[in-house]
Structures are given as C-alpha cells and as structure tokens.
Amino acid sequence: MKNHDHSLIKRIPAMLLLLLFCACTEAKNELLLITKKTVTYQESQEDFPNPERGFYRYSETYASNFTVLNADELKGYRTPQTIPTASYQVASTLVFRYYILDNLTNSAIASAFLSNMQKDMQAARTAGVKLIPRFVYTVTSKAGNCPEGFICPPYGDAPKSTILNHIAQLKPVLQENADVIACVQLGFIGVWGEQYYSDFFGDASTNGGQGNKLTDANWLDRIQVIKAMLDAVPADRMVQVRYPQIKQRYLYGVNSLLTSAALTEKAAFTGADNARIGFHNDCFLASANDFGTYEDYGNSLSPRTSDASVVNTLRDYMKSDSKFVVVGGETCSDDYSPQNDCEPAGKAQEEFASLHYSFINAHYNTAVNNDWQSGGCMDNIKKNMGYRFVLQTAVLPDQVVKGSPFSIKLNFKNAGYASPFNKRTAKLILRNVNTGEERSFDLSTDVRTWYSGMFSLEESIAVPMDLASGDYELLLNLPDQYASISTRPEYSIRLANDGVWEEQTGFNRLNHTLKVI
Image (cartoon, rainbow, N blue to C red):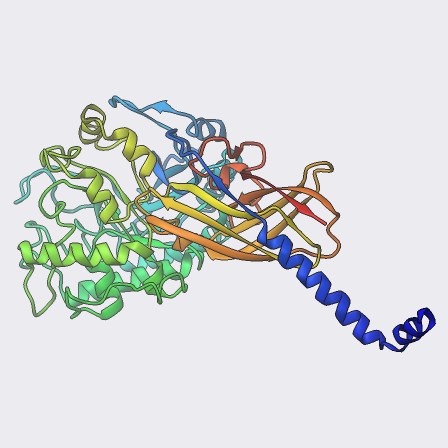
C-alpha cells in the first residue's frame, strides 16, 4: 500500500502540485489578512506650522532699491513671533512678496532685478518657506482734489504693452522656481495691484467718469493680462484674482452673468484655466460687500450694480468655486464690527470656513486681527486656516506574506477651512525596525480632495518579494511634489495628532508594526 500511494503521488502532475501550493499560500494570506488591528489616535491641540497654509508674513521690495530676502529671517518665521502692533504671535510657512516695479512703467525689467528675484527664491528654499508673489507698479494712494479725495489719479500703474512685456520677462524665473511658489497673485493692474484704481484698464471708482463701471474694452484688456499670467506661471500653480467677477468674465466673456457656473469637482485639478484661477480678498469682512469684492462692475451695455442680490449671488459663486482653488487675502477695516469679530457676535470663523481660506495676512489689518485675539477665536483661526488633518482611527494588518497585497483604512477629520491647493502624493512608508530600511509606496489618493469634514482613505498595497522578512513600522508621508524639496521635513504635512510626528524625517507614525513573512 505504501508503494502504491507513492506511485500515485509520482503520477500527480507537477502543475497540480503548484496549484495546491498556491492555494495553500492564498489561504494562508487570507487567514493572515483577517488579523487586523484598529489603532486610535489622540487629536493634538497644538498650533504648529504646516506648508502652504496659515498666517503669512508680509514683505516688499522696489525695483529702484531691491533688498533681497534673508534666509535666516525667513527661517525664523517658522517659529512663533510677535507681529508689530499685534497682540498675537504667529508661526508662518508663507511669505507674501510685493515686487514693486516703481520705475519701470515704461521700460524693461533689468537683469539685476531678475537675478535678485532668483536670490529671493533661493532664500525661501533654504529657509523652508514658500512665497506668494505679486507684481505691482505702485502701492501709494495719492490724496488730492477728486471725488474720492483720499486717492486720486493719475494712479501710477502701467499700460498693457508694458505689463505684457514684463510678464514675458518674469516667466523664466517663475517657471524655474515653482517648487517654492505657493501661488501667484494677478497684480499689475491698479494701485496695490488690486485691479481697481487704474490709469489704463478702466477706473470703476467715482474718479473714473465713465459711469463707475468697466467697459468691454477694459475687460478685454484685463483678460489679456490674465491669459499672459496663466501662461507665465508654472502650469501646476494657481493665479489669484481680486474679485469673483474677474474670473467669470475671463472664463465666460464680457457679457457673462453673475449666475455663471462655478468650478465643479469633475473639472477641478485638471490644469485647465478654470481650475487654476483662485481668489485673494484683501478686504475680508470689511463691509457688506467687502469693499467692492462682491460687485457687478458692468460692461459697455450694462451698469455697475452692488445690491444685496448681487452680493449674495457672487458670494455663493465664490463659496462653490473656492472649494477647489486657492483662497487668501487680508483684513482691511475694523469698521464692520461686530460682523468681522469672533462668534457669536461676529462670523469670522464661519466666513473663513464657507469660503475655504488657506491663508491670511498676519500684519494687516491688526485692528481686526487683534479682536480675534481678545474675542477668544484667534487660537482656532491659527490652527484651522487652510487644512488641518486629524487622524482618528486606522484599521491595519498585523502581518502579511511577501508577494501578496494588504489593505489599510485611515479615518480622518479635516478640521481646517480648506484642503491643500497644490498637488502632493501621499506615501505609505514601511521601515524595518531592526535595519532601518525604508520602502515607500505611493497611494492613489489625491490630497487636494481631502476636503473639510470627515473622510476615509482605503488603499491596497502590494508587498514586493524582495522585501526582507521582519517587523516594519508603518508611517504616512505627505511630502512636497517637487523632488528638489520632497525630502525636506519643512515641506511635508504634519498630522494634528499627538505622538505621530517625526521632525527629522517629516513622516507621521501610524503607531503600528507590520510583520512581513
């Protein structure tokens, strides 16, 4: 009988033996994968710096007297510092940079200016921060005998031909330094580059003498500038405009309606123009219409209007659109109190959340910002500006066989007002607890879709056969997309949890060990 059994086994085809082995291995894997652990994490109450969000620091320089940014000073911004005239401290990863082309309204940009700009970018890179550039010709309001009195023409901006030539000159520097540019503001047109008080693009103020509106020609000129900026700015970076209607008129034409469709999730993050135009509101909660932010500026056939219906329609447009694009700005007047104060008397936090703000000026207007400190909501605003990812629980396997996949589930809360506006790849890191060897696995998720509120991330990862057997720590890495800074911890996103952040690596520990066999 023994010999008979042996002969039967000899007759079993080799393929059948292989199938039996694979089936056993699959069964073993399935058994192993059933063994999972739910890990619970503690939410952090700490205010800490994270890339491309928060209170930005202000800086300016003039073409007539260029002062290059100092890397040591910029690096200091990453730790809490007191702001002049302010009752609060901020830690910042963003630096707003005014490039004031004060002596260039009718001439080309000198090579020395472009060289100094490059030095600015390198200083930011060395310091671990990013810049928000805005190019303008004047930041001075000249009082005089005119209807508005406090600011009178000529305003001091430049004609379209000069602006288009300057944008072409700036393009190489912008393209080369996309890694340390968070976004770019449209600028150029009008005092402060806010597209309002302009000598060449229409003056919609009471000084203008054209019915306080913009003509079709004014809009077409502005559209050309926006188009040039979208071309000059790196394709994976957004351009911010001052008013919602500017985006509508660019996308849908000079006769576009206030009810024009906002950006949808399907069209977001595609690199198309509608997905690359964001907003900077430089008079956040300053009046019922934020000092002209929510107005219909008319065209050749229609008047300028700013009634409650216009305000509500444009705010609703921006609420929807802003979920998918970059939003920032500054406060500018404390006269609209208590509306711009903390809740319950005001609605500062509600407004930030509904319009998906990622950053705000730390320096202006401190009269408004100080009210948030005294009113008790500044700590929340500092923590929740932009994104704030809190890992709540994770379902993770205890062990896995090499060559087989394993799944993870991470349950998050984004307590912030917005999601990240620039692309970055989420990575799961396996680090051998004995040798320190690390393997990185790209996850399929798009961090830009980690919107405010609750969300879950479920992924499957295939373990390669050449991974050494042993115990591996699991870590989540959310690095910058650019190789030049992708290994810099300053540019990686930190989760808002206690006991997970590794300052030296920029990784977030999942506090779980996976056995690979």
